[in-house]
Image (cartoon, rainbow, N blue to C red; front, side, top):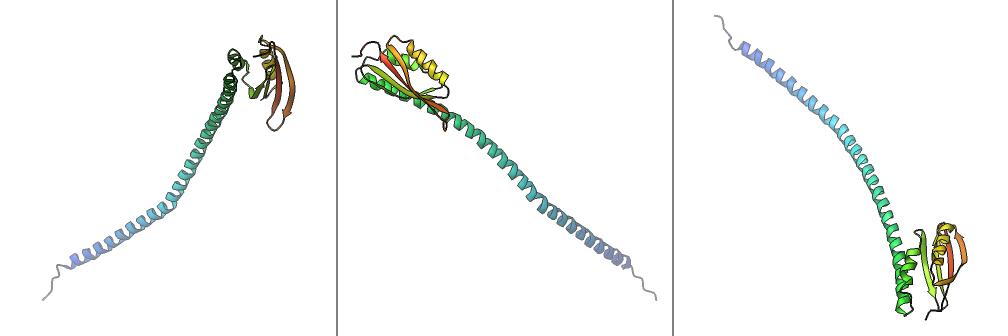
Length: 181
């Protein structure tokens, strides 16, 4: 009698199916490994590039902020100098010397690039010391002072160029037309 094996095809196809599943699984593993390796190389590089770009943008923003801060400091310094002049003039007023009309005139006469450092006075004269980038601004200030009827004589006592600050330090002596009481 002859045996019929009906399951032989099933076993053969099942072997084929197992082999196919194994190859598919190996291909998937290889693809996943390739993706992981590519990500391991590409991702850190991308992160590094983004970090460099971000740091460059932050540095650029900080530089812009630094300029704005520097401009703000310059404006603040100018305001402080003008406030000091106002305080000096208020001090003169507190000592009951009749400068009430002279204060606003002096403030208005100071050119923009002239910095007043001190004002001293006695009954006969007013001494002003300060600094400026140009001698022309000092001359303009003296001409402005000469336009006041309060002074009979305006004399430039001293001008010294200071190279480190690129400014001319000056002293002006203004003699009152009438003795102030």
